[in-house]
Image (cartoon, rainbow, N blue to C red; front, side, top):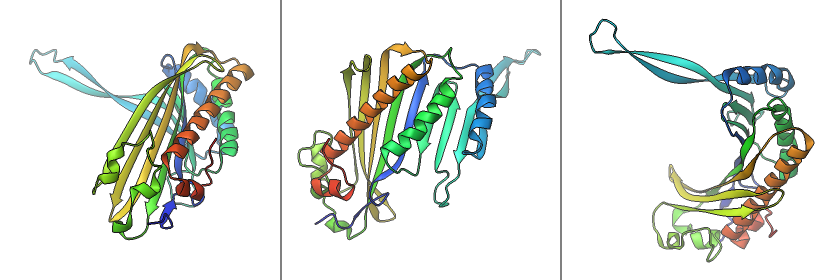
Length: 275
């Protein structure tokens, strides 16, 4: 078997989507969420035409005052955040990109990926627009997650994991090569870092062999979550530079994992080189 019939999701890359995350140390209040939205909407509506409030349902239990012993159950809908979507020009995905701001975090998801430099320039700008509005909310975690898809378009009997994955890869459970059916492989570990400031990073590597209506695909989800030893209080350029440097390191870690997971032939298909 060659990998001629293995097709990366994006043609010259396999990235289905990438998500960037910032997590606050403490939940934002309703007032903070509303104030942020009121400031963000005029800045983002030219790029993100679809803006949707997000609500969470809470259940309130109150005992019946008549003494029946039966509680009165009252659902309460509470504002939890806002989603800003940019519709896809191709009509083949819910959106080309989205921003979600909630009480716990800020997420930016890119569904139409190009290259890191271009994507990160946009995401960094979105971060700067939001974070300047939250000087009283410290940042404890930042994260990066990639979802990669390769689809096999040939006889299922010709599919060979040994041609797709690097021999003795430390990121893949070795017995997958002897399996005849579908499988899932997970590997996670913690790494300490000291630059640009001290943080602990949780790296997770999930690999799935999937069957969708008789078509095999390999899904790789890699996530990286950096927890700062000392939370960051955002005041401007210095803090944004720190976030940018850590994101670049997470991106470099991701590239290294994927390179050491996939065979040389598959790496060439997606123009991935050792870094």
